[in-house]
Image (cartoon, rainbow, N blue to C red; front, side, top):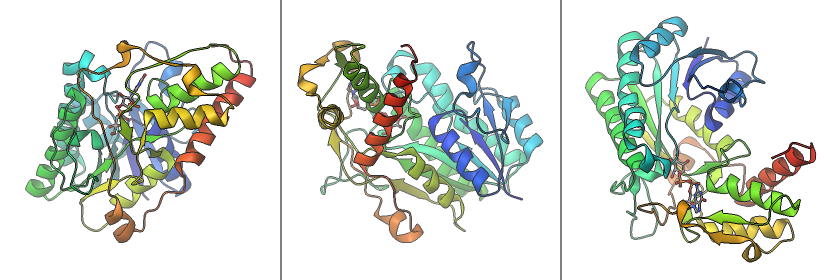
Amino acid sequence: MNRAFIIGIAGQDGSYLAESLLEKGYEVSGIIRRNSIVEHQRNRVSHLKDVKMEYGDLNDPSSLDRALRLYRPTEIYNLGAQSHVRISFDVPQFTVQVNALGVLNILEAYRQVVPEARFYQASSSEMFGNSVDDDLFQRATTPMNPISPYGCAKVFGYHIVKLYRSSYGLHASNGILFNHESPRRGSNFVTNKVVKTAVQIKLKKTNILELGNLDSQRDWGHSWDYVRAMHLILQQEKPDDWVVSTGETRSVRQLCEYVFRRLDLNYEDYVVQNPKYLRPNELDYLRGDSSRIRKELGWKPKYTFESMMDEMIEYWITYFENNVEE
Ligand code: GDD
């Protein structure tokens, strides 16, 4: 019996991964953090009745140890993080504790309790900072020069996974995932913020969208496609590090243009810049080379940028049509 343990199961990726593994016949368990608003803890996974969840935290090693002893997973996915790059400048120490030392905590528990299991670490394209190869792509060999507390912490996580792999012979792999979105994305990330607010503008609930840097460029894929890559990575005989991306890049401005146009609106009439959303340091450009995972593992995304944004637009239209007040 395959048993998956997902840290960050209540997040965007964790919820899609749990769904996909249940479909494959896995037993799925995970930890959730305590939150003062109880509904916020489980709303992405409340439809998944077969998932087993315990309270736990990447910063509480005993909770990790206990959960691994209880569920004895064959696959461990570490998707838990303080995942917002701008917020990592506001809470740098917390970000480092969770995104760096938290990885060490889970690796130690894994090594002690279930060393025969396989381990996936959610590494990030934010680790590259503003490094890019001459052909304007980032890949696993591109130098990592992180420019946010989030990115610095993720670089530590990436390297400690490689170190535990080579030192202890663990089946531990990194997925270097570029930005990935969906209707389940938190609405303080730029894609879902743009879509949600544009739909509110269309429905005359508001008339302004305040953003930060419109010129930064990202390689945006769909979380549903990317969790399939995570699973594929753990099915390989040898652990390794893989880039997962679409290979396309677009600016925040192009994102706004597309979404507003789909709603028969002109983004220039509504979008304004608010310095509040600018970052102390900005990563300008991301475009990932995922040719290796496509060739060697046969991974291929199902969604295009357009079909992903259309799904998100549909989601918010339905949400507001069902008379949910915001
Ligand atoms: N969030 C946000 N809000 N971003 C804005 C805004 C705004 O109002 N206005 C412009 N942006 C720009 C940001 O400055 C950034 O250049 C870009 O939109 C994308 O921002 P986010 O959606 O917050 O994502 P991110 O690229 O910083 O980080 C995401 O991707 C990483 C992988 O590269 C997160 O998912 C990270 O957890 C992930 O590791």
